[in-house]
Image 1 (cartoon, rainbow, N blue to C red):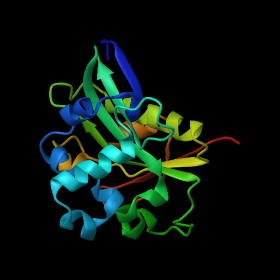
Image 2 (cartoon, helix red, strand yellow):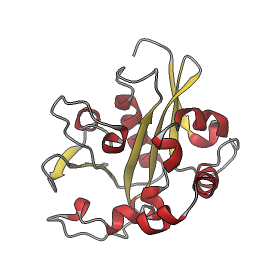
Image 3 (spheres, helix red, strand yellow):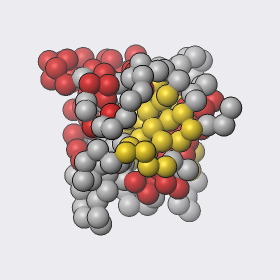
Length: 198
């Protein structure tokens, strides 16, 4: 990216800026499906999902001590979002067989963080913004005391993918950020992990 890029914790963004990024399907999801799990997510209207996300991000409160994601700006325009939190915070992830296939570890280990979702705003896509977002999410998790961080990206094979499919991100940004593959639970899905040095 050649334009000025800034990535910061979501509490340093305004709620309106985050909502500019979360449009369309992402706007209906409000980045809460992984957090709530399918049953509770389907039962919650969009307004409730938005309230849950707003509380979790601490948007509009730069003094908040905790947030659950990062926002990217390109030339001061809100352009991207990455959801990152301790892995047990994501109920859907915990209950899905996909990330755990062939693995035996404590699902409630809050020392392992996860990148649950990546969203790039229309007009800023296809510029490589997911690369710095994944790297920043890893740095954020480490700064918060995480021992490791995981992602669950997809291999697209060069094919165009919908946001629903690719909200987990493509593999490339994870590889570039130093993640290594630890499992192949499906033909297109990978579990990627970065363990931090003590």
